Length: 310
Picture 1 (cartoon, rainbow, N blue to C red):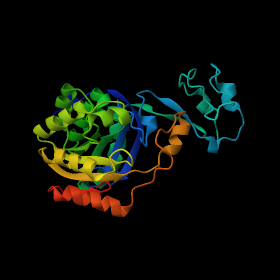
Picture 2: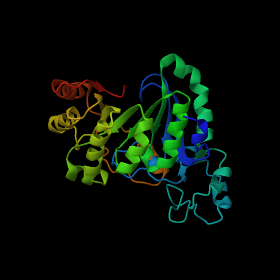
Picture 3: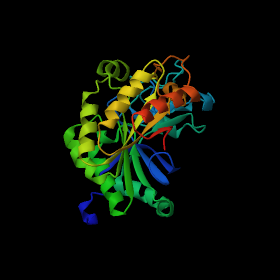
């Protein structure tokens, strides 16, 4: 592949680039987080990833009450009577308030970046990639919501000889799947439940597209690891995990299943973007003993299983 076949000027909205990860594909990896997701999981630990556009976040713990943000906002979207400080109906996410917020209580989630700019960041880890057989992982959000950018970025990574991984919900058009997958070495595919009605209730969309795309990716011959967030009251039971494992066993190229125990690490982010956390606060992380019981269910069906991402 010639480099002139890659559009290095293609732009996307990124909300984080994480270096030195060892949990999202083989070796040491750089994870590029793309904004935008068609799903709205109640337990989402990155709620700032759901919208495709840049948005201002407010952390009250860093606020000194200087009111300079209100003085700088020309459209009067700063409201000091609100705990979240920002009137989201007025805010246009221009970022002018951030420029005046010296304590860092206001920050922008999301940055428009070109493929070339992301690749410059990726190159910083080239030595680690070489020594560990690592590479680049696209995550989100849902990377397939920015298909043109994801495609060009994956092509640029392959032009560097890097291993490529994509973490996806699988909720996308078949055309996008066909276009993206030839440039992907490994798919970390989220399967949260095989129950369509429950999927609709807790996640906002039914799961037919996801399950069909899982089969499609499997037929394309791409290596797959199934990832299952284990959520109390949703799928943290033996029958739910068994049904997911049975589905995974019918797919080609499934290397393993990862069971990811529920956690509350992203709860504070909901306040920062003015959203309500829809899971019950009394929910606790499943015990190690219970996770091992679920692991045995998956292994009894002949699949390799890990608790946590590997």
